[in-house]
Image (tube, rainbow, N blue to C red; front, side, top):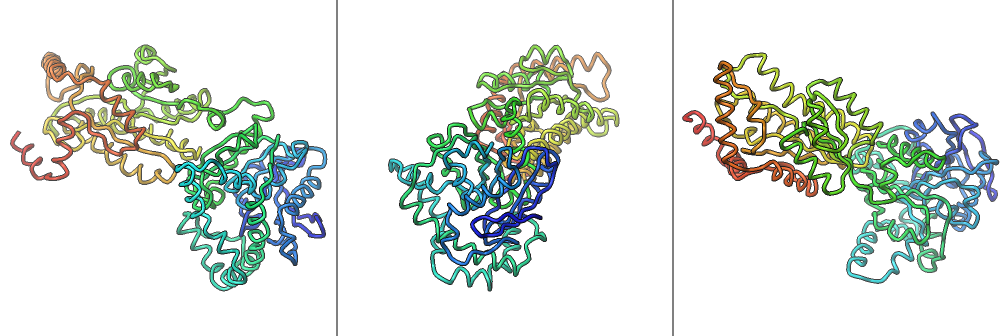
Length: 559
C-alpha cells in the first residue's frame, strides 16, 4: 500500500500486476472499499498494472470533517492525484462502479481529461449533470414513465437527505444485515474484506456524498462533454440505476459503447467480475489497435446476431438456418454431412454432435472465427422405430448418442460460453411431440426426446438469471427426410425400406413443411416461450398430456 495526498486528505492506494503495463484504475462506490474489486482485479492483473484506492471517507483513507469536502470537484481531484502518482507518464484506463462512477464522470468530463484518461468504463453510476438534462427532456408519456421509474429506484437518495437518521441506522441496524442483503437480493455469498465496524463508519460518513452533490447538480446542471472513449456497462438486474440513464449520452460522449451485463448492482462485481474484466480488456485492446470483438461492436452499432444451428444439412435445421439468415443474422451451420451443410449456406462445418471432443473443437473454432453465438439451435437428430423389447442395446446407444447426447453437448459447450460472456443469449432444443405422447413403436426415440424436454426445463432454471433463454420445440408430423433415414428394429433390409417408404408417403400427405417449424423457432427466440408445440396434433397432445395423462396411457395400451 502507498499513500497519496489530495487536498490534505491521505488516500490509501493499492497496486498489483506488471508496473510497465497499461494502468487500470478501479474506483469503488458506496458503501464499499477497494476490496469490492477483488475479483475484477485478480483477472486484470495478469495483463495490466491494476490500481485501487479507498476513496475519501472509506476504508484506510482519511475521513474529511465537513460535508463540503465530499463535493464532486474534490473527488475528481483525488482521482487525478492518484492517477498522477501511479502513472505519471501515461494516461490511465478508469473503471468505476456506483459512486465511484459518478465521481469518475466528474473527472472524465473535465477539459483536457482525454490527455490523462485513456478510457472510462462506467458501471451503475451516471454523470449527475447528464441525469439532470435527461430528466428535463421533452416530457412524452414514455419518457415520464422512465423518469418516474428511476425516481422510484432511487428512493434512498431522498432518504439520505434526512439529518442524523441514516447515519444512526447504518451504525445500529443496516451494517449487520448487509451481508444477508447482498445474499438475498443479489445472490452474492457473504465474504470477508469489509469488517462490520469499519463499514458502519464508512457508510455513515459516505452519506455526505448524497447530501453534498445531488441537489446542486440536479437543480443547476452543467454541460459536461468529453473526448474520452466511454464504455457504459448496464447490469440488467440493477435495482438502483435503470438503463434509461444511459439514453442520450451521444450528446456528451462521441465515442460511446453501451453494454448489457446480466447481473445485479453488486453482483456485477462480486459474482461476475470475470465478465467485467473481459469487457474492460476488450475495450482497452481495441483502443490499442485490435479489431472490435462482436460484443463490443454490438455495443456501438446494431450488429446482427450470431446463430449456430446443428443438423442443418436438411429439414428443420436447414429451414431454420435459412430463416435466420433471411433476417440478416450471421449463421454457422454444422452437419455430419459436410456437403449438405455447405448447400444450406452460411459458415459450414462437418461435425458429429454425438462426439463430445468434436463438439468442443467446433465451439472453439466458432468462437475463434466468429465470436460467442447469441443463439444456438440444437436440432440434429435421427429417427428410430421399434418397441422396447425389440430395440437392441446398440440401437438404444445410437439414438441416445445423437438425440440426447448431441443436445447435451451443444448446451454444455455453447451454454457455458454464453454464461461466461454475461450478455445473455438463447438456446433452442428441438425435441418432438413424442416427448409427451407415448407410442409403443417409438420407445427409444420418445425416450430421447422426453429427456431433451426435461433437460431444457432444468437448464432454463439454471441459466435464466444469466439472461439466457431456453426453448424446447416439439414438432408433430413434419415433412422432412428423417423418414428416409429412420431405422426400424427387428426387420430385414427389404422390410425396412418398405416401412421407410410408407412413412415418407404418410408425412408427405400431411404436408406440414419444416419452414413452419423454423418460423416457430424464430418466434420462440423473440418471445422467450419455453415449450413450443408445432402442428395441431402436437398442441392437442400437449393439452391432453397435462390435463389427463391417464387417458394417454390408456390410449397407448389399446393402440
